[in-house]
Length: 111
Picture 1 (tube, rainbow, N blue to C red):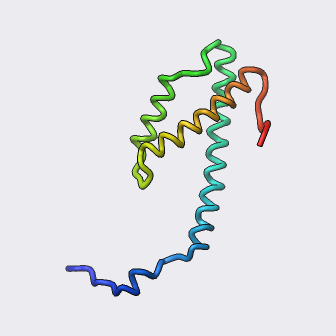
Picture 2 (tube, one colour):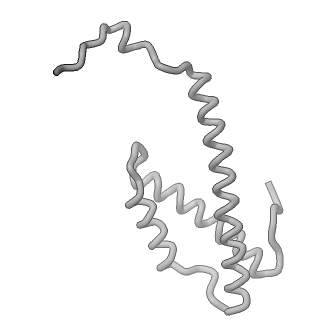
Picture 3 (cartoon, rainbow, N blue to C red):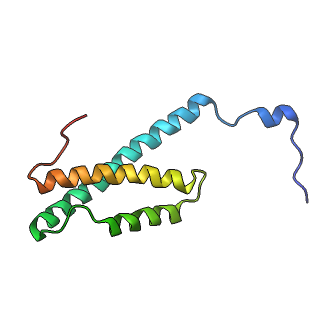
């Protein structure tokens, strides 16, 4: 059984308005902030452990593992290279948080 064809005018009518999509993006952005802060709380704990154990801040094997993992988990539409770039930035910021913890500070410092 075939799917009925839509007319040209039906094909051009979006299901949602731009404002609807923007509201959805705003909601997703808030969730991303929550998740990034949850991830950062984990980084704080790792920094505390490294401070006590004397482990190095930068661990390239672990970062490669993270980048490979997020690329494998990526269903698109963002290309893997874009996901890797985003996570490289997340990892850079995580190192900054971890560095602050390992040197005696933590929390929201600057904007």
